[in-house]
Length: 177
Image (cartoon, helix red, strand yellow):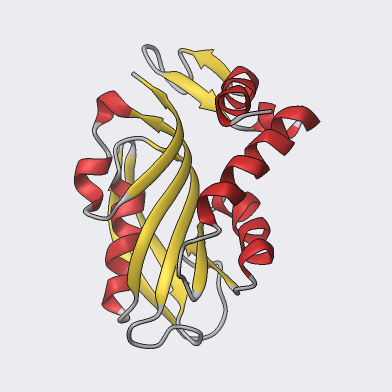
């Protein structure tokens, strides 16, 4: 199966829910992929084909759906995984970054033991919308000396122009207007 076929299988498995969480919003749900083994394999293949040549020291997954992809990527790259979580969810020494969401404000936290100045990281998440959480993750990692190589998402909502806020190369597999 070629890349185009895998992308189509992946896109077909992403569910769309109109008017959720509020009227006028179309919610793109990645969990349909996890319920379809053919789509899940296609997604895994696409991710692996993309990441194999990235030179990173650490994979960062964003709370919470980035946790679904991060460990799989780590196993392929042979690199450790580190989560960025919402405030109050991580023990030990953490660094914080406040950010604004479409529906309010939040704080990300990161355990800093594995990050040294110049650590090359890949950030992964399921979806890029307005870019607020991804930009906050980039700022948080830069504040502890990390070098963010790329942000990898499965779905991108292009009309929201989230990539413009991030300032780091972003790779997305499926784009919606």
